[in-house]
Length: 239
Image 1 (spheres, rainbow, N blue to C red):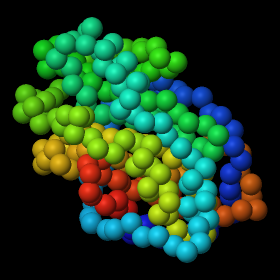
Image 2 (image 1 turned 30 degrees about the vertical axis):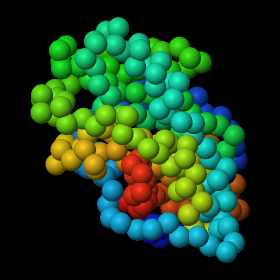
Image 3 (image 1 turned 180 degrees about the vertical axis):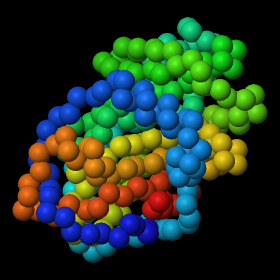
Image 4 (image 1 turned 60 degrees about the vertical axis):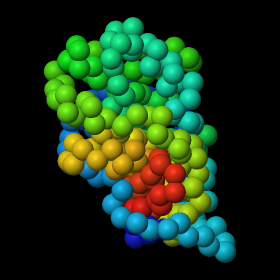
């Protein structure tokens, strides 16, 4: 698998739980749905096979300490049930980790749904099996866009499995300390459903690194984003 080049930086990790910030998360997932450039970047950028190595790299070792739960399991069903009480035609537009994942801390999920009947988006967060639904009026999605949203039932690779595959394939001497995960069901740049169902993993974002304690004597991998198709039989790629 092709990966982003590594570079040295005099910082590294220490584990500390970081609480989610619902309002920041809502803005982030809403921007995901509305930004053509961002969602386009989430599509598979190219075709590259996963490659193995004889010894685990520092990149793979550090990434393996990060984990995600499955997104399309109990939390998704809880979110979908809650949002259909507001709008029975609501369809999933995107899902993102509520905050970043790091060693010893696995984030929850935030789901973005859209209803054509009500012309409104809904952000649904799930914590401890309880769903919280917030209206996001003003999001405009055409009927064609709504019809083009991919059915989550087509997802063959949930986030936990997709991340494990990616983490095992990473190389380089730098450490990956934080990661955010997301997936969109529609790519407005071309409307291609096959390109929309792609897991995107963003490592070592600057804002996230500022929220954890860092060891100045270790090496940190540069910020990098990778995509893994949620459809069976498609390889991962670097963005």
